[in-house]
Image 1: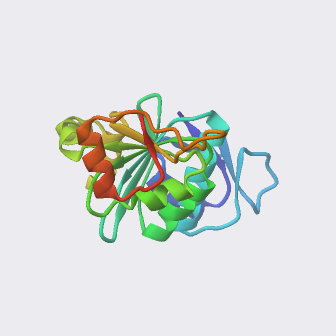
Image 2: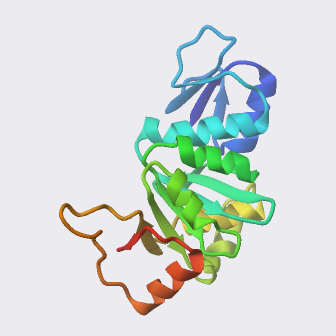
Length: 209
């Protein structure tokens, strides 16, 4: 996917750090426009700093192109975030927790794939995500792809490589429970491994599938 851009050079340099394919003063599959320019675009940027632009793009593109996968590699301070479409990364960034929360709260219905680590607040992510569905991925299983992905996408940082690797795995799918009229919430049977994982993640209102 190619992102087109019309606007200031300084913002273009920020976009180059976020997107793998961005063309200045050209229209793309998705066109981004600096708010100061009189051009029509799919995304209008009213800010110029890295974190703000990242939140805007990560939360806007899934709704514009229709779906895709959002990979999250949670850390103590830094969080790798990748938006992939058709198995290819489109956006990549390392962001703080506040920016990640804002992306989850504002993004449309996109598959969220997160590594099952001690830093992953899955309960919070479920509450923030508008789709209320997460794919919890086993990190050691996803790690087998790191070498291949590093070679193919050398511009990605290590946290971003990890986030991208999660998007290739379905993992365990969890979501908030839906109430059943006249009865308790539906809870399909789960393998014992899934029960253990859910208890570890601390998600009280969920179903496994």
